[in-house]
Length: 116
Image (tube, rainbow, N blue to C red):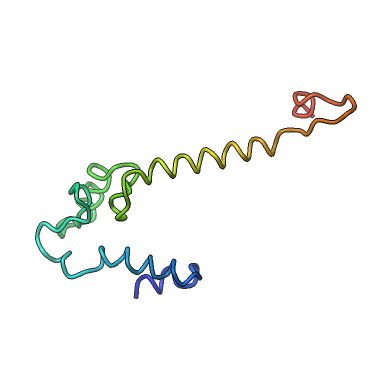
């Protein structure tokens, strides 16, 4: 239900919707109610014990990493490498597209264009 309600309207590909349902199945399951259930093998990710808002905020700020490890989503640790490579390629591609095209006649230098 959560996968359909939250993502159903935005994710239109049937296989992507199926993947979201499978991934969320590890978070919304009966095992989460058992003491000591962890979302990942490292044990970093787990549902904190019932408490007040400050206890939840403390868990989030002090125990969870700033950037999520791929393992929490059931992915291999190399997913970070692949993501970094893809981000770098997109950045460099954008920089190359912003470069002025060379022409046969003399024109303004890139610095002159930027100054304008």
